[in-house]
Length: 116
Image (tube, rainbow, N blue to C red; front, side, top):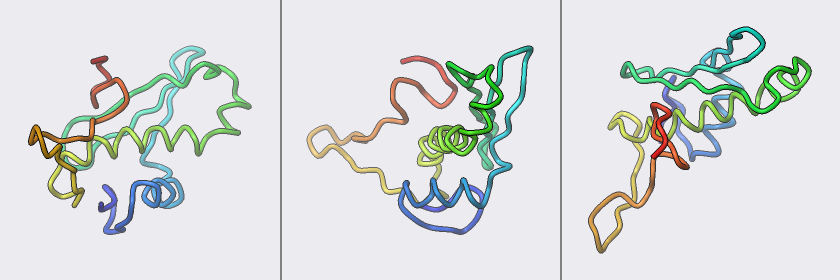
């Protein structure tokens, strides 16, 4: 699969590490009162994802200590969406019996953050 932000190619774990080190600014964090959120946008389409940093998103030390892990979650959600774009170079395995993709977009949510 190709990185959404450059031409780097690798497996999902390799891209996670690459994106955290090379594209830190692609995941934006913001505060709304005493709550913190992260935002990451798809570079090809208008879709993006916003999540509240939980459960300790109000603790500044926690946010600083785990900043890369917070980015990793954002990038993971982006990569599930990125796989739907032909430009990603992702190979989605098909269920041989049903002829449908065997992978889901993410654990329990779609890219827009709606519960399934």
